[in-house]
Amino acid sequence: MGNIHPTAIVDAKAQLDSSVTVGPYTLVGPHVKIGAGTTVAGHVVIEGHTTIGRDNRIFQFSSIGAANQDKKYKGEPTELVIGDRNTIREFTTLQVGTVQDKARTTIGNDNWLMAYVHVAHDCIVGSNVTMANNATLGGHVEVGDWVTVGGLTGIHQFVKVGAHAMLGFQSAVAQDVPPFMLVDGNPLTVRGINTVGLKRRDFSNERIAAVKQMHKLLYREGRTLEAARAAIEALAQSAPEAAAEVSLMTAFLAGATRGIAR
Image (cartoon, rainbow, N blue to C red; front, side, top):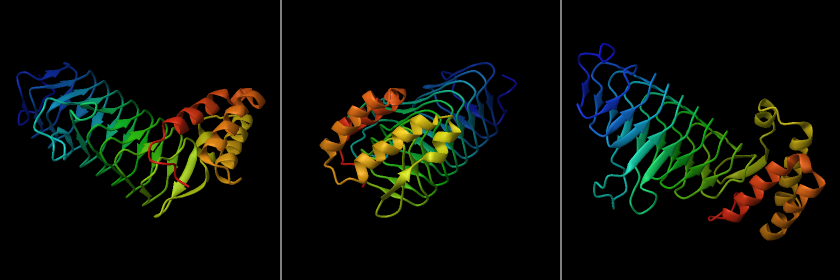
């Protein structure tokens, strides 16, 4: 293939669309599949049982699909699955899953992963997620759609981050972060809601007002988590235009396993 640099080593068993570009000194293993329009720069290693979708941009020195860092891992054929139109910058490390969990690490679509980002085994990263330089996900982390993770932020294993949340620079995230929240610090503190992000996504004033009310019920009235959740559920009747946001929040709170960030 003319768009594979002569110094690249692509295993004969790898499945690459004819439009894929591979740069110099890149290594592609036998169990790798790469979709149309994806470009892989030089000095990248793509190995393991890794599937990469369409129109991704993978920058130099990234490590994609390597064996994970779980001491229990014994080389089982677990997976890394990456969607479409992701930008994966320099020195990013994305690793395969473990048989103790889903046996798969998943990256969605249209994500922006900056330099030195690490996504550990069995993580689920949604779509339209931005992870700034040196952001790190421990194993089994779940990150919802449209989340922004600030630089040098670490997320503890098994933590869940709800959609549209924003995690500020150099935060230590050891508890679940509900959708729409703006958090930062060490220890982590909820500062309010991600108003700027919601406006950029064309949330109406009514929907943003309902999100503000959910924040108030969770954090400003001294309610227990169960009482706050019940009050939030009732918002679906008084603010029907925000029914989707209420449903997202109540489902997240029901599934929170590490307690929520306060």
